[in-house]
Amino acid sequence: MKILLAVDGSEYSRRMLDYMTSHSKSFGDSTFTAAYTVPQVSLRAIALVGVDAARDYYAEEANAVLDPIRQLLTDHGVQADCIYRVGQPAAEIATLAESENFDLVVMGSHGHNALKSLVLGSVATQVLAACKVPVLIVR
Image (cartoon, rainbow, N blue to C red):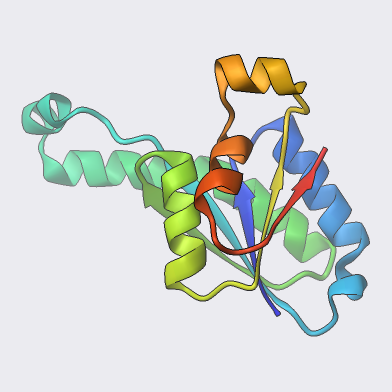
């Protein structure tokens, strides 16, 4: 099974990772990929600082989130690739899950009630709506 772990560095992602590491044997001979989406800066900002500076910024932001995740997974004996994308998180997760033929997306959730999610929206709700791949939400 090919599993995408959608992470954002929050406490909710940490809970999801704790769940996955404590239940990793339940997923058998699966491969894991942790993916983080860096929000895209405006084109005006990129024009001011340059494409190379923007690329460096994206890499630094992603590594700040992914490095501790990589370490946590390694400490628990879970081998995982760590990647990042730039853009809107829900759209990037759904696109990545489908384009790379993942079997399952796993992500944490704030656990908003239905009304709050309707009003505020959430990445988890948006992924559920957009993704054709099964999604496991850990609360």
